[in-house]
Length: 432
Image (tube, rainbow, N blue to C red):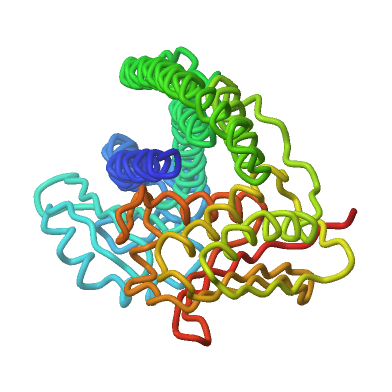
């Protein structure tokens, strides 16, 4: 916007300067020409009284030399008897031959001017009596007609440049104030988009930008209110799960099943984490720690192996012996594995085998979960949030995608060698 304003002002000021400078330049040239012509006519007319009083050559020569035109040798007088006074010393006959036609016209009593090369000759007749006319010629050279024109044009050009530059400077200062306020408003919007709930637009001196800033601040306040209400609602709903969890814990303890009790413990821990995460401000979330992904895979596959044996599923796990550090929380990685393995048990036929493998390639950790089920008909659609073709919430793959993205990686949905689904979690390995 600032650049466009400068271009508009530059174009407008240039048009205004041209509209005034060109006519002024032409006027200066016309004034210079008229000044030179008027001086020559005035000097020629000043000799008329002298010619009327005397025809003495010496007195007339002195009168001619007292004029500025005559002192420069540009004024010549032809007396009625053919004598020539003034000039630059040219022979009388040559003067008569060069100006014979103009001289004859001037002796008829007609005053006129004519162009001669780059200059102009001004002819002034002086009637001394009947059939007695003296002719005066004053020559105005081209350089005299242009005297001072170049200097005046340079001055006009300098003034024009100063005016254009000055208008651009003033326009730049005005545009800078506008673009600065607009830039601050844009920076506030970007900060809000990046998750800074405290970002607010400053007050602007421009009414339109000030109104936009107030609207943006109202929107930010409203977003904070909705976000706070949503967190409280999620926390309340999560807290309401504690009552059935307590009853489930009692049933698990009564059954004497260690795996069932361990599952209830993890469910209760997940609900507690959900309540805490819902109440935690977004901008205060801690940075993810480094977690050994290999240890997480071993622990969670051991947990799900009990259910796999009950379902009669064959399962394999291929994990490196050493640690595989990644930038993600252990709880979130466990949630990813639980979601992926839970999908295998929920959406594949009983007895369908599955395999979990973890490999490291070029600094990337590749966690793959393959199953021998029917597969995923539309992998792209399956990655949409809340989309499920099996009657579930559809958030399992979304949770896995979010964790992978937060860790600097990605999640891929593909086809397993057995024809079933293959989910690959691709995240970078970090230095411990």
